[in-house]
Image 1 (spheres, rainbow, N blue to C red):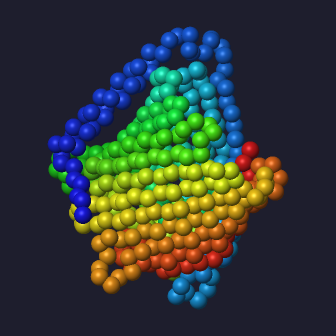
Image 2 (cartoon, rainbow, N blue to C red; image 1 turned 90 degrees about the vertical axis):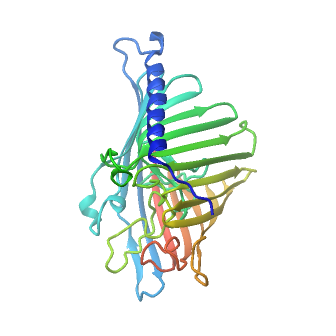
Image 3 (tube, one colour; image 1 turned 120 degrees about the vertical axis):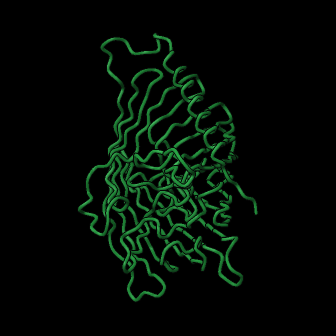
Length: 389
């Protein structure tokens, strides 16, 4: 098993190097020619969008007599995409996500949250510096669900090994004709700074994430990408447990958690992943796989998945996904696998109104990675209605 550690000296070097590079990029960004700025009195261009979503479930959990059934709390989002000038733009997403932010009483949490915010400085034709809460993770192509913004995911739930969320930090994005990359330095939400002193008192530390992808020309059907992340401090890699999803097991003695169905991937060392998208009309196929490990304690997991969507007509599609996570350090004789099968359809009833139905079954293993909570295996049906305009 490979091991990955970061010494305190190298951690300090990482932080100084990161600060210097992004300070230089910000300095370059402020030197944009004057003609690229707006004329006096000219107002920014603002595009507003709205996302609305309501979903429901009927899930049966092994070992429990009753089904976990009912309507999820409704979710809503108001987004403002602002072009301040030729080189300066931003996105603000105000979202009400009671399932993510609330406890057992979702209604008491039905209030807007600043769910996502980024500030973009375009330093050249292909390079953008992004600050705020940039998307943090290793996915390059596949869609996923986040709050009321769900229409990019052909199914309802996410994968139990989705390495993606948002964090506070800075990202350098490269977008060119046939390839792209991004480099991110950030941490999880909350204003806890890394502290001086010994490694044990360093605080949250930082995440260092790099991705590269081949996107090809517009008419090519194959795209491929890869990425890796390491971390310093005590918080761990912040996207190791995903970004929540719409399976609510509501287990006895537990508050509602959107993450008690996600694999508990090791987050203290390195997480690496490769993914690909193949789009021969009318198919859209996603493949991904990777590993996560840490050396203290000894933990290694491998994961992978396959998803497919077929457009039956302009307004109707079928979709399916299979995901597996394997705990490489599971005791002999233990079930080391977490698996999830998802299948369903989407129907664009009217313009911008999407109805989705999904069947899901998940089998938990016996190890900590594959059974992150007291959750047992489960299965059932979900439905979701969303508007996006």
